[in-house]
Amino acid sequence: MAYGGTAVGPPAATGGPSTARQVKLDKECELRVEVGPDTPLRLRLLTGNAEIFGTEIPPEIWVTFPPRLKFAVFTWYGATIEMDGTTETDYTADETPMISYVNVHAVLEGRRNRAKALPSDSDSSQGPRVIVVGPTDSGKSTLSRMLLSWAAKQGWKPTFVDLDIGQGSITIPGCIAATPIEMPIDSVEGIPLEMPLVYFYGHTTPSVNADLYKVLVKELAQTLERQFAGNAESRAAGMVINTMGWIEGVGYELLLNAIETFNATVVLVLGQEKLCSMLKDVLRNKPNVDVVKLQKSGGVVSRSAKARQKARSYRIREYFYGLANDLSPHSNVANFSDLTVYRIGGGPQAPRSALPIGAEPAADPSRLVPVNINRDLLHLVLAVSFAKEPEQIISSNVAGFIYITDIDIQRKKITYLAPSAGELPSKILIVGTLTWLES
Image (cartoon, rainbow, N blue to C red; front, top):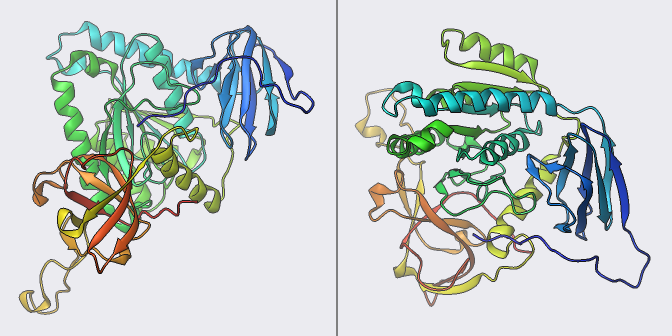
């Protein structure tokens, strides 16, 4: 999946007045920016050193940020920044939690070095497994990016695991995914996607089928364990795990499940005293797990449910069209008979007549239900499974996604948008409740 690149060159000549302006940042200060909703913003570093979410900005090169992007430029020693374009808001802040974040990185760095120095068959050769937890809009994704970029800058290749099905940092929402991070993460293009491992949950909240969410988390964890077993370098580099913002009730239960399933050794709690206290209490019998409370950044922007829904829609659009509208997805037509569609979960396991008296039929969270191709599939995003047989669907990761644009019942034809032309890698598709209205 390709994203738009950074633009290089002088400011574009326009008939109107120049919007270029310079901002001088003192040491350990940051410039917080929200790009306007309609036009991109260009930015360059004139003097000093600065970084965006842990990735250094190259000097004197214009970088173009697309509309609606929110980011912060931080400097350890002072810098001068030039911006060209309009912003929704931009301001400088001298109170940031960056010192505490970089201290965490230093501790993790020590653990990676210790793990690397040990024989690869010893249990201690496993580097830190960091899980970042906290309520919605507390800066979990941003902190994850920083820790990954700082580690990559030191020559490590940590694994990024994203369990946040609501937003999706690695791929579209509705999935859990993992990918190795080999270089500091590009401040515009985001997570590189050469080799992502993606499992399709199909919904944007785990409450639809919490048991299926757990099953997929376990599948992803087991696949990564197998990869680590054969790769001492990846083992020592460890992983950074981003989680959902739902931290109460079922959300809290799924958080504990993730900590256990991935054998997390460091739990970073962003901006919530209560959650930190609960986790310290429940994990007190695990001496090898450190629970650390961190301050959330004042630059974190709280979003309404509507804004999060919009962000999801943009993520799906970006998958097909690219960040800067630089991709050309293909519209393809297939016969109903060319494809088989399945839904995971739902439907009782056994009829009432087969159950003991008084027992209620329970829904099987991982039951495969064949789905008839009809107009109910319109505007849904479906995953293309790598499975060869239906029974392999749950244990298989996915190759990518298609978007259903038309269903012709009479001709038994289905029209769909795919990132590229040609045949799909598999005939087996998975459907959930992930909808998108292409605007």
